[in-house]
Image (cartoon, rainbow, N blue to C red; front, side, top):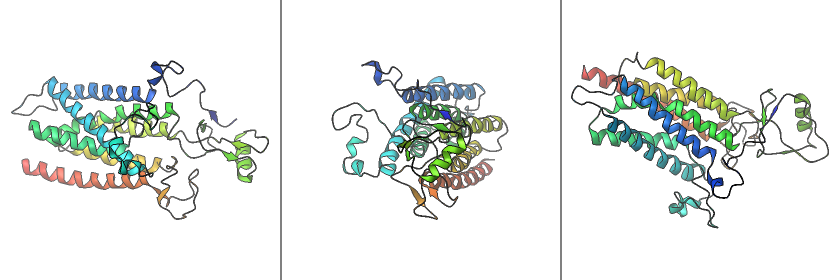
Length: 321
């Protein structure tokens, strides 16, 4: 059997079936782990003296207020992007007060379901800039310190997506392909479905619907955009040539990894491809590298921004010498 069934014991709720505690979800807990991890790594960078200036000594209070401000703006940006860019219903454009309303129309608590990484990226930058401007601290230096912490914390966010059984990838015959319970199913009568199932040793019977294995793209992202990118930045932190260099590596590195992982991740059904060689190309499998998703466009913009950011930062560092 050349595939893996999604573990049946995993549920989005930490305590499924418990009336009050059932509101606690793994995704929210992963956010808490992410922020805590980022804070402790930032403390490590702080202990190395990377945030001290000749005229100002950094304190623990500075550290806490910096990351707290960044988190608040990150959450605002992530939610706004998710509701205004990724939502195609138009609900939030007509009723913007619902963006931060954690209940559905029937009054049921849903939490702030739906966050956009790219929105969080923009919001986080704005938050850090506002804090540095208010506190009169060097923005580029503090951003470099922050990106030493972000990727490892981000890893927990993607693990949360995996535990939620969401943001899964396209169908695959790879032996690590996973059958996610909420993924789109296909008719067992289709010839290509029968051929696909035969390749992976999946038995199908009758004329019902078949749930085919998918790339666990959440884990791909957790590994490459989280752990690998963090290791690169962590190694470079003591070898950087100018303030802003680490920020550029993070921005370009994330954009690069995510751009290619998007070929394995299934785009949102209501958005589809923003640029497509074939307008009728299915979303559940990659038919051409010229079919470009919304996430890939945003990642390309991140890579372009990283180049500009690096050049401007380098020129500023030359002027200060």
